[in-house]
Image (cartoon, rainbow over the protein chains, first blue to last red):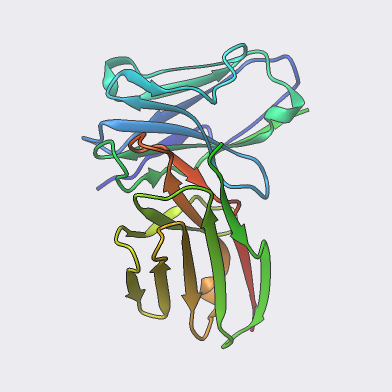
Length: 114
Length: 112
């Protein structure tokens, strides 16, 4: 089966610019996650969707980050405006169900903010 | 808040030596998962442990879940260069199904 797809793989922007990331989860996976992974650290959950509803966005900096999962399949994560500290790899993951299920990660988008 | 901690942060070994990474949670976990991330890659699921005191093996890898379900370990016997990468443990946050708290990882390098 196809894995989690993400694009773009790399993005370089200047601070205060906007950027958007796209994720297509594994077919049939109800739960989708966006993580931020700063170099040398473990992934940190930003937002979790169950179908097209938000389950948890407590760690999402809502003044600049937004995410949506229209139709409960693809998802986009947007940063507007970007700050230097947003430089990180943004990982999308999906799981079949909610509740401690195995999470399958996409290749990630490496964002550099100059 | 709930924390998951791993030690050591880095481990450099000679090929053929053993390797162990330890994971400790500030709270009791319903389960613990282990992921491996190769350099430049993304985390890949290795295993999930659920039962207190559970031990699972995958070839040269041995995973253990503590009796109190607050700690875990991953032991690799006779490391190979293909074992290079960062090993993360992750546990669910509270009763919030699916939300994982990741440790900071142990980066393993293997010298041939």
